[in-house]
Amino acid sequence: MIDTLLWLLPKARSGDTLDRYGLKSGQYGVVTLHRPANVDQPVTLAGLLEVLVEVSNRLPLVFPIHPRTKRRIDDFGLTEKLAAVNGAFQLLPPFGYLDFLAPTSQAKAIVTDSRGLQEESTVLGIPCLTTRANTERPSTVEEGTSTLVGNDFLKLRHSLQAVLNGSSKRGRCPALWDGHTAERIAAILAG
Image (cartoon, rainbow, N blue to C red; front, top):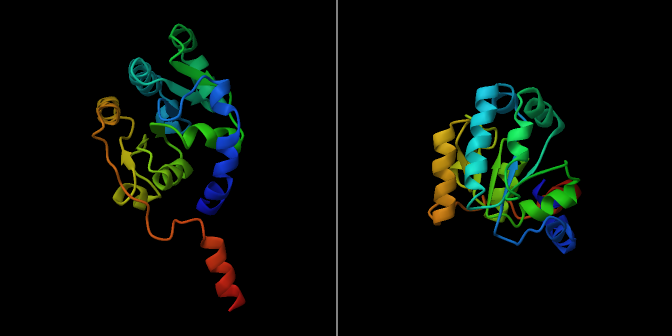
């Protein structure tokens, strides 16, 4: 996964994705939410969105929205509320990988329940607020840039404030997450 990320990063960043959405590198955040614990309960989803809308007044946010999450927003009557928000909180259609990598790799922060983004943000040195109670990627929390906030609105708000104030977790990239895993495997197989 990291090999692919680092291999495609220059191509993703050379595209026009940021320009298309009026984004400037390091001056916005990216949001992804799709897990049932975050989007299947109206109170939980509304609370997370409320914090994100509030923070978007200080840090513009882009939210390439998963079809499942979009359905829940519509089902719970939250569509009009989000439509009334200023342009600092952009609901966007889902992206392909390169178009998604462009904004995620240049974000000031990422709020996500995605496993892959926890790893990618760690490699890229971007604070990742993971809206899950636990993770299959513990090294992203223990060593990397990920902070588990669950679907706790106050913890999410506090962690986003830390990003904005420059006091968020720094983390480091774990050993061997260098983009050369395929080469090492090939050498072992050839040996």
